[in-house]
Image (cartoon, rainbow, N blue to C red; front, top):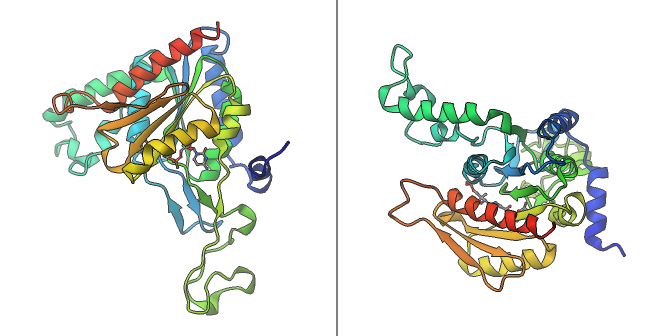
Length: 323
Ligand code: PMT
């Protein structure tokens, strides 16, 4: 029997057109998967989603709503998965942080040109770190496929297309992207820039009320985690993230996500402590546990090292259980 959720999910891809570059994304993913021969060997693969999705308010987009995410969680986790021998598909918000490069464009004190002296040479104090990351990125370049998205619609079409190509026990879906919960469906999206003065509004595109306030009418984005778990990637291990700002809600919301979607693991984090601690809740486990950076190791390691270490062990165990 179809539920209201099913109907919304099925309707979504009829109403909202696919991004122009989708066929190219599919063929790059196919080549990457075939090259790795991933589905038939013991190679392990992970799809890491990263960064925030945007919600355009106009088709020719001038204004949009955004979701917070620098891309640190995703980019840093992608590095850790590569170190663990995984092939990584990195589906990220265009211009957000990327593996290895992230070390040089996340500082508010250092811009790109600050790395060079007036002769264009790399300043000695940065050289060692740059060479180290350059070497790592070269070492892992054949194991890393970098794909972009911008809008929530790009993200959902890409996720579905990639998921059906990867659906295997060897694959992890590590959904760290911050996905919008509300959007404007394509058939309700104004074609042109929304006018701020009533006299320039077309009758067919009225968005200001009588007092001149902009009134937005956003639909809920269907929860595609359900489709991913039940259909698109029903053979893979699926890890979702839960972001909250109220500590009292985090554990309850993570539990609710596992109950609703029946996937393998939820990683919960709070906005302001997300780089230092996360909560892990696995299916069939009674209780959540926390991973934390101590003051001692905060400088030398990152929380994603702890997360990915635990995830990859769980994945090994999980794959064994299917043999
Ligand atoms: O990039 P950083 O700055 O390092 O920040 C990392 C992070 C805080 C963004 C990351 O750790 C994180 O928590 N990402 C998930 C944020 C999020 O979208 O949370 P949510 O509670 O809205 O969604 C929970 C899950 O449901 C997500 O895994 C998402 O893929 C899924 N979802 C969400 C909305 C939707 N319509 N459909 C979904 O399936």
